Image: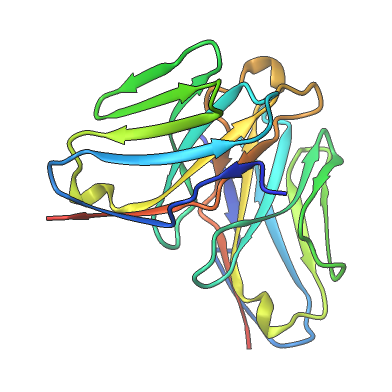
Length: 114
Length: 116
């Protein structure tokens, strides 16, 4: 059962506009959330994270919003640039003493059109 | 900074052969994860190891086995290779839980396996 879901497999946005990528989760024990960016034939790279004690975290053009009651998080990219074109995965984790285990969504392919 | 090292970067094997992929995690990381990404697909979780013990198992075929050694490096052994095993195999590592989860996993660059 998919505990982390990204319901939009793809998204196209004009350069300079805002990109909004969404992610939903089902496990209320999740308390850490991350976004990864992945280019073809490369490993995913960490982008930004947020813990459940916050509802917003910002890093430059990237902002992640967390709505715990709705079990929803989103990644905003403003302004979008062509180099942002990639697949974005959200991931969630619940604390465990026996190793970190993150559950990944299925990804959203973002295309930023110049 | 040290990253997750995977070897080899590319591997070509024939059907029914055996392949071994290696992963060297970031120093002090105690958990290793293996993922398989087929052509046009999202990465699929295969298996993970915490402190040299299997911690979680995903969609890993019975023909595959893996282990984590005393120096924390991990090897994924794949036998009776099939054409469908051709994929990009990623390894990731993460630090101990008490160090926090702010940065999640660090992924390697992957091993591209081609079965012919």
